[in-house]
Image 1 (cartoon, rainbow, N blue to C red):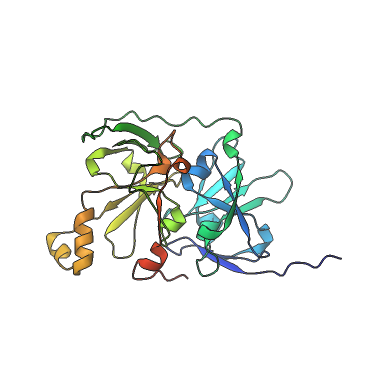
Image 2: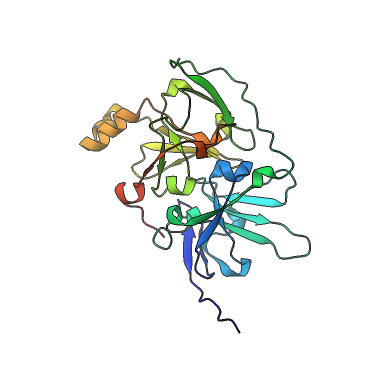
Length: 291
């Protein structure tokens, strides 16, 4: 009889810690990266434990926001407070539901999702093809020399976007993927245009999450959970003057900027770009405390 691999417990959570779970599979050595329309926009990378190997320590799947589309076989679940995509459940008739955990939510002390081997799955090839929502709003007001217009959306289309920028290609400089506690969970690929280069329609459908020093707001679609942007909080002059030197300088420099997630741009693949990987998990202070 083959010797059974020893079980190992991993803990994970959404960023705001409303949902904390543990899974007890064998050692996790690889994940699955799907390029379908929703997994790509959410930058999810999946591990698939047995449903019986998942235990919620705080909260449960029923408290998460559920998003489904198309054949409605898959329920994508995310935290309504911080926008973290936590899991997906595939419904099966007469059988046990299949459950996928977004490995980005596993605690860094248990597993570094950035270093985890990824096996590709071509979900984009599955039928029916995704019909990307169209942007119909006004163009951004700021002209960009040699630039072009990029339009995009969350997955459900409740939020649509337009961005004027120089062409995004492998030589484009200044793109960032950050490993900090929130960006690592989002998996966003950030670009940093001026506010006037961006138009976001459907802002009433954006959830807002403020964390850490409360200087920026992460914004995601409240319906489908796709992360759209990060925008500076508007501090009064009095509150801004209270910031320490380096923090104040960083805040002032970021005030005219929208951090924009390129994964929302339809017809563009971040796989064709060369973002810089920033080690925010170890550099950003104060350090995030994992629950």
